[in-house]
Image 1 (cartoon, rainbow, N blue to C red):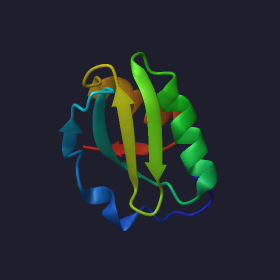
Image 2: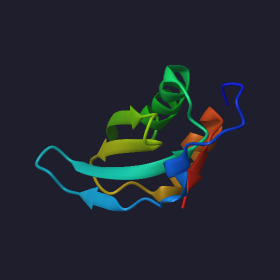
Image 3: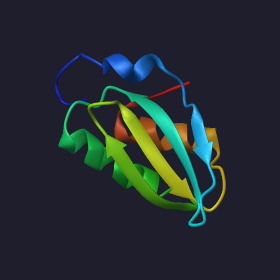
Length: 91
């Protein structure tokens, strides 16, 4: 974490969206504990290392991460990457 103990208030909503546009599957996840751009960078870096992930977009204010991938990503792999960054995937 970034030194605060406050998680995003939105972080209690589980992942709810998976769409398949022409350029890949986009899945939105809730992530608890992100508070700044440094948090976003750490989460993004870990998620880009997950097999099949093409792009990652982090919205710190909403506490969400949008992952674009070849197929619907494995939630356990996404959770492991988020945990490795020091945060928690809300399920």
